[in-house]
Length: 95
Image (cartoon, rainbow, N blue to C red):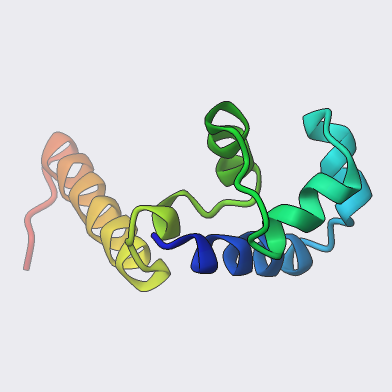
């Protein structure tokens, strides 16, 4: 992911979750100015912060190029597999 997209992604995810720059800064032990710099692509978060930040903002998939739609499709496929396993365990035939 390009640095340009990373800053936009961080900012949009933060806004979507209704988290202020100050709140995010306090949680990660950085300044609001640091958050602003990341969002404006002036600097990049250190790797150890980026890992936790992507988890907090739920943008791990986007960072690695996986779309939200693909994630939902994968979740649905996983649910169908779980249902299939449960049906087999309780002896329900698939029609």
